Amino acid sequence: MSPRGLCGRSSLARRHRSERHRTCSSFDIRKPTGACGRKRSVDVAVEIGPAGLLACCASLAAGPAGHAADFPRGDSGLADDLRACNAYGAGFFFIPGTDTCVRFSGRARYEAGFVPNRNRTQSQGDQSQARGMIRLNLDARSQTDYGVLRAFLRIDAASRTGILQSTGTQQRIANAFPALGQDTFGRIQNFFIAEKAFVQFAGITAGRAASFFDFYAHDYEMSGLTTGSNLSSTNLLAYTSRIGGGLSLSLSMEDPFFRKQPVYAASVAAAAAPLGAPSQFVAPTAAPTPVILATDGGFNATGAAFLDAVQRSRMPDFVAALHYDDSWGSAHLSSAVANINVGGFIATPALGPAGTTIANDTAAALLAARGVTSGAQTDYGWAVQAGVKLNLPMIASGDGIYLQAAYAEGAMNYTGFTFFTGSYASNLTPIQGASVQQFVSDAVVNPITGKLELSTSFTVVSSFLHYWTPEWRSAFYGSYGALNYKRGTRETFSMLNGLVGNSAPPNAFANPVAFGLSPVLRDTDQVIAGVSLIWSPVRDLDIGIEGTYIGTSVQSGRVPDATYPILVNGLPFVTANRHDAGQIRMRIQCDF
Image (tube, rainbow, N blue to C red):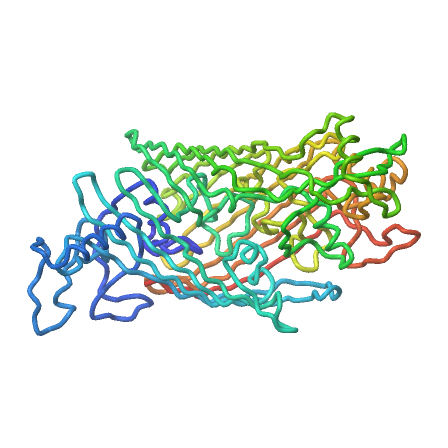
């Protein structure tokens, strides 16, 4: 593998990924020329690991008691006190007075991009983007009777502007905060996150780390846009057993919130509907979703009570991963189980026809007559993933290819289907100014039965890295993803259109043409393909450009074209069945 790193990731980043399965790497003396070709008097690399942090803390607490690495201090200063630590790889040095080895590393990055956008309505029309980013790492390790004790820390921070950089996804999980000016809201965003903070000891990994479910995780891509799971930061507690011969088994208990897609709530969609926009940012204490109380004898609901669709934190996700490493490459098989839940009925009067209300006692009696006694319920989603990486030195040194596929029921973020479009919201456009919306919920509450129904998703990705020369490399990648809801879901929701409006499709039985054009809860798919070219003129410096195509479509029929919101006789005048977009992005990145 080339020492310069793969496309968007430096060799330091790849080393961290592999260290989820290994505790040490071979020592490799660095060249006297430091980061970006500049010479340094003291060559210190930065990268952080979980066991090292505890080791560092323990060593500092122990003070300058007699250790093998306790050095005399000379007149030449700190540089003379530092001694290389050969046990864990290049860049490690002993903390004076301790047996703890530490390595510091970091990254500076600039990116700029362009995305064509012909939509000039609804405060849209942005095309350019930019980002400046810093990364600081610290990796501390020490040897114990139980093996290596390691602690790893990573801080990422960035100033981001424009579409695809100022992302709603990161705001929705509190990793970023927006500007609030007239011209800047939704266009400027600062990002700050404790990306990694974990401890490794005797097979245990505990703290904030990458999910053990993931494998490819956009390893060869600059922008990381393909469909595929890539949760680089979550809170977890895991145990890894080295079976032998390159095979390991990991069991991980992981934070559920970073994997949840909302249960579809008609009220949230309705709040955004007058703006003609998807539900980008919502902060509800409750998310009402309707359950039919009665009909007119046909297919129109005449009353509805509302369940609270906000998911509670009831149990962690559980992940199992089988990983194999060999000289030819690696293979990965993983699975996950996730809890999906909704609260009980909301204690507000039920909704009747023409804006009237239905008393709670009457609503409860109507529900009981239909066998619906309690709204609070729990279901379980699941996901499986398989992937393989093949090293291809017969083509060129450093070449490789990934192949990966994932399937999920009620656990969409494990397949990575929403990775480009965005996560943690029920309905989004794949890009600003898109013709179509995507409804991306893990589950819906069937309005007739009041029971959770889980969506299914599937993704497949392939990525090939080729070194034209030791200084020039390219990645070629593509992915496909599909999302489906249970058959009949849209039809049952359409019975509520007269009560909740356009957050439910027009009635499928009374107005089949309008129903067929509604975007609500449509099955969608997405194709992404791209290519990059990166030049590394000196060690640890990447200068690259990447072009990506994104095609998002409904799987059948057509929907209103959101860029031309024109109605004729109550029907959209312009329709679409897909939206095609492109992006060009450049990057200058220096690791040290």
